[in-house]
Amino acid sequence: MNHLDFAKRIALDAGALIKSKLDAPYVTNEKSSSFDLVTEVDRAAEQLIRQRITEQYPGHAFLGEEESFEEAGGIGGELDKVYRVPFLWIVDPIDGTSNFVHQIPGFTVSIALACRGELVLGVIYDPSSGDLYWAEKGTGAYVNGSPITVSDANRLEQLMIGTGFPTDEGARAAVVECLGKLSPKCRSIRSMGSAALQLAYVASGKLGAYWEYGLSVWDTAAGVVLIQEAGGTVTDAAGQPFRLFMKNIVASNGRVQEQMLDHMKLVEA
Ligand code: IPD
Ligand code: CA
Ligand code: CA
Image 1 (cartoon, rainbow, N blue to C red):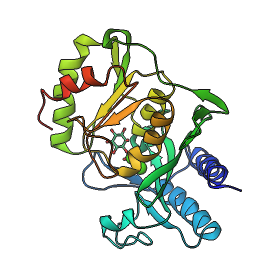
Image 2: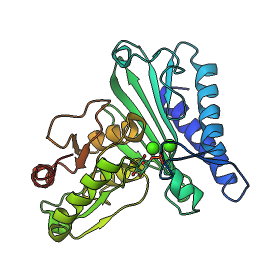
Image 3: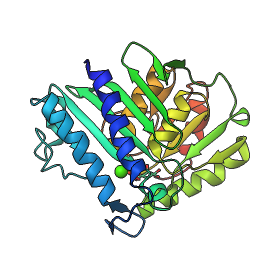
Image 4: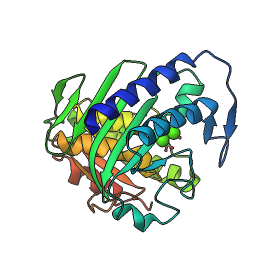
């Protein structure tokens, strides 16, 4: 099995585990605040994914949201190492834990693979809809086997735009300030509670653009591969190209990227 088929398989298996626990009793803990949750199901899904990767590819490194950098195999707390590791799996076992806890659809499994710091594949699985998104560098982006592309609209007024409300107070305030500036200019704004899902929606043309501040690499890595392969653009809020550990993200069909950035520049993030 190649890397992509393997990633799809484990995303589906982790998604099935998560879905099976939706109505089950599980322990929920707060991390940095009551906005920032982790459940036993997040940990179990990450453990499943990590175990499968370790068995299949013992030499590969692993970075999951629920593991500290210190524990992450091959990284040892040094982010620079990411650019030297031949294969690094970047995993968010549940992106959208708040949706999961409140039984709202829109939580995803997000799995990406980086080779010496370069993203080469991304898989995002939405167990509620059953949609499996994937992309591998140079071979296009797909949902359930059908090719996807970004929206071909040229103006924000023609587009739905996604955003999220990060756990960090300052980042959340910056998002809200941007929202005030963008909402009169676009068709409407949605916040679906999973960064990965919204990036997949940009890749498939459902959303024309998405922005959020204060994100982590496991939220964005898989979605970035999807958008790049679907013909879109991802930068930071200052318009600089995507980098693995950047926190502020502006993603779009490319055609409206400058219009998005014009609004971001008005806000201090
Ligand atoms: C969160 C989701 C949410 C976004 C937050 C993320 P988590 O990830 O992606 O949409 O607004 O900033 O932290 O905690 O559910 O994995
Ligand atoms: Ca996340
Ligand atoms: Ca998560």
